[in-house]
Length: 527
Image (cartoon, rainbow, N blue to C red; front, top):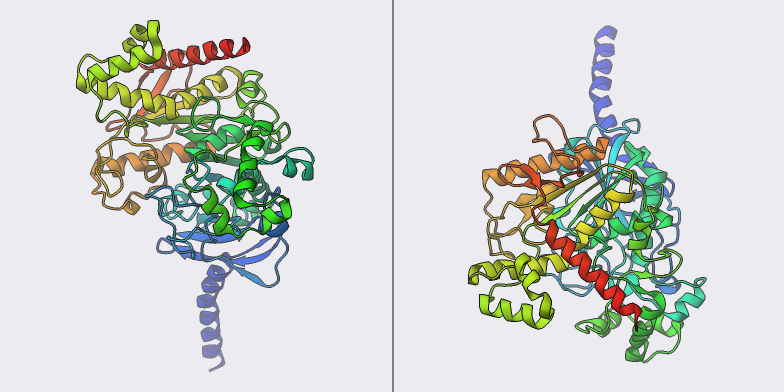
């Protein structure tokens, strides 16, 4: 009888051990305290969501550099997203899964991040870490968007971190009064949040099974602008080992061209006038909704990174020219139809007139690069020109300059596969942001899209390329078409069905843009 009871106890313990092990795997210690996560994707992935990485930027910390989070007591419940950062609703296709209503403006108490790991990862795994920075023009977006979900990327053997950072007026307001208060520099709070989150990763990610020495920063649109900027700013040096940029670079003439803090500060002072306040205390006391309403639909009040002389010490392009950027492997590119919303009503006659009006004697050279032989060609040229001005040229310039001075491997792509129509993107084009769901394996989250086998195949291939790069600095691996390093001959990998690589056929267009910039700079010197 005693032997029977003993055998029952042994069996019970054997059954209990896996349960305890599973429960323990969802409990992780950080420098701020213990937290508890959950399983997602049928138990294949551990998710730790809504983790504070900095103190709430409210009260006196509104428009201040991020401050360390206070230690919490007990166990933090990391099973739901933190609030998305306060923002006006500017992008129809942005859907949020956090507790804040999708129709609401979010919260200023939003500096949280999410960690996703393979279910089997333990604190000794030392897996590569992929640190995602969402897009949205520095004015919208959040880590809780379904297309950024962490259900699938960790299955490729990486740890995924996604973050919120301050946006718009709360992330990038620049004022002389703030500069006086903060040691001579203000603004760039959203970028400083990213650095704070990267420092959190350095201090904590090993407890989740990640390798702090192998962190890859990656982002799309404004997130890609941010990646190119973080490669250049001194405060981010040493916090990451690789970089991936999807459609955006802070070296070009695109919508995020940087002003100096002094120039931006003069413009931003209009906000105080509009809100009828004269002091920082009064400004910080204005309710969130009222601040957002004051800047909504006001094109004279635009908030983005500035050259403040400290966090961003000089123009980003100058940092790359001098080779002072982080010397890390880079994978970057853009989509074929970045300017797909442009050119729909263009005709050959209109396009030729546009060339003559804007470029005068240079119109023939312009039309050679962006031809107008018939209406269909003119429509394509207008879309290409708009896409180059918006995203492609700036991304190319980033890649090109880093290739010259970065002393590290560079891999360049162009995303060519036209997506099937969907709710927010009815045209079958490779639109701006089209690549996100492919990279994350989240195609099923795009409303209204009916996906084809080639979409699922390309998504899996892109996930392999991206995670291979995060692991080794080289995207190539078994079963994938060879991705040549960007070097002599300008080889570009075309993400399409099938994937191919060939020399860059559009280099003359980007060199034309570079020449236009240089001419404009020379003209400015004479005034």
